[in-house]
Length: 428
View 1: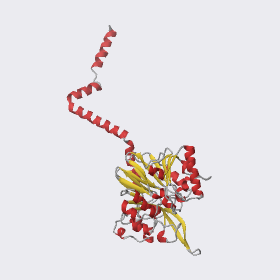
View 2: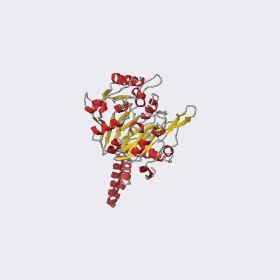
View 3: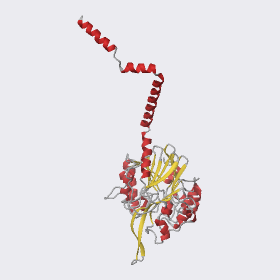
View 4: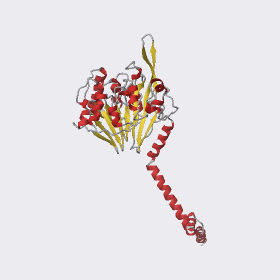
């Protein structure tokens, strides 16, 4: 009997206790509107959390891009900094719908070309100059972005050393074909080359095809869509790469530069043109055989030589941004200082269309009294690696050393005559 009573007392005591559930129920009866408001707030917070969770990559992209832009030096100078500046302190993260062009420095005072392109998840390399040891600088940079070790496309524009040397292998280092798996290789349809560098390129390319299963097409096969090649490759949502036809894919020429593979990228409403070292005759054929659009970006023909980037081409494409891959002012090819890259003639022709001209590397020269000629004595970054980003219809430029326009550099003011069109343009 005592035991039963005791149990009844414990039950009665428990039933009178104000539990959290009862408190909440009473609050709901007394303040129904407040409860509804709290529920709505919780639903909103959960929804926001879900969006952030599933879109976190885009948030990271925005933050990383802001950080990258903030770290660019914009002091208005063009001091040559040593080291080449090819490896960014922290690689920018791009979205799966972004298209970016990276005009690389090559680790020496020799002019050459190497352009890394990221199109969504697709990795592309066009050329690997200027010398075999440039493969180290190129590979180090590309690995910041090509994290799976696979280049979906490799394009070699023509058979000159300053465009293909980094593809080759030596006992000292592996070339690009060994450093990365390459799925599709597109290169020049014609050549007069017999050099050791050319033969080593062919050997390395063929090894990639035979041993690693890469597909190989010439620019002519692509332009005419034969043997499984395509003229236009879809790289991602709204991003395409087109191999443009020009006559020297199937005609002989004494100028090796005119065999250059020409590539047009399209991203939404914007176009981007790279023509290798194509010279005046090749540019005329390019215009004649293609319905070329106006472009956001043009990689200066033949490193800004006086023999390329002609009015015939510029008047059609009307570029808004021009990137010059060269060792600025170096006397590797000429003692005529007006014709060192980028030449005075190139500057005069491009000026009516844009003053947004950027240059990768700056050379230093001295005059040797004994030999009676100028000599290259060093190099450093001018703009450094030039990155052109197309994202959400907006095109921006950022550089690893500084964002100074060519016309505003000390080198330009000392070595070139400013065209009229640039004299009234505001500083970049």
